Image (cartoon, rainbow over all chains, first blue to last red; front, side, top):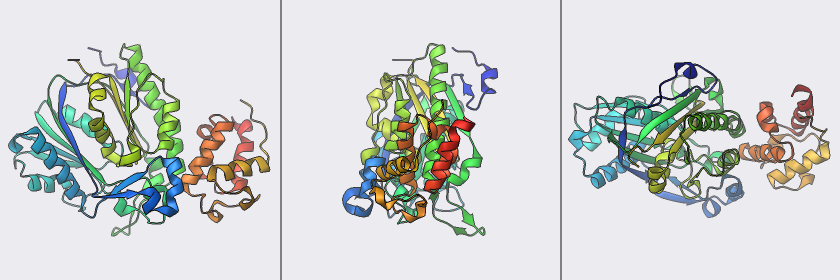
Length: 327
Length: 84
């Protein structure tokens, strides 16, 4: 076991915490995308030229609510895993598309799914970094809650200006459901976080006058440069710190922002690190993008020392490195 | 690293190429708001194209993200050697 080094936590812009948490299993991951697949080239012909830049050929849109999508993903998961609903002790919902300002989506989902009324349920208001943060939080709660349902869901397409090529050709509506329990398959061996609220204006959906919810604004160039300057360094530093301690990161599951962002990140990383992508047919599903990517690349995730890296709205960026003790 | 002066015609050519439009649609004083393709996504393409000829310039000059015109871009690029 690597001894925690508290000095490191306090150092630098991207303090890297090397402190193993409880080992855990991911029993299963399922997901649901918006029921309407939009082919960017044919359904958004005015924006077709964007495909060369974003790499995204298909985005997915729902007429339903985020709660509906979350329920779909969770029901698939629960049916497939044959887990008794009553054994889920905690439900965490990561969303920025809650159907209500209050109550929380997690409470509504507890009712929809018929989960135990003695379980804990709460939301995290976070976007593209949300799965990583939710996973860390779930992991840290496993000592008390042995079986945790982690939901990520967003319906960003309802927030978009229809004439905004930069967002209409990128974001997809989607939900993921991840079931986590104590176990021996996975161990978080390092994590690092970066938060800079001064950049909140670059990706924001403001509420004006306390009542009117505006449409989403994304300063794509500012967010892109932030990922180049800060996120790439954070990821590289974390990989380097792990390497010094004998942990070789073999695969990176990065938030599926767009081709431009991922190409830039890829060019700065050692070529031997595998970096799967699925943005071309899934689009950017914000907090669900990493669990959907894991779901589509299960063996790579299970067999390799893996970094998960989520970054975006906040501005917020979180990385974890996961080893597999029983491999 | 010292960056050589970038002249206006080279910049216009680079921007036009990044936006995939004809260079004659862009002039010395063109504003982003005048070119449909120069939106948020187009601007990222300009930054990527700049990085290809001036390595890491977009990371070193974050103000480039907020540049809204050809004169803005030219000024920031030509200030780069002085401040970095």
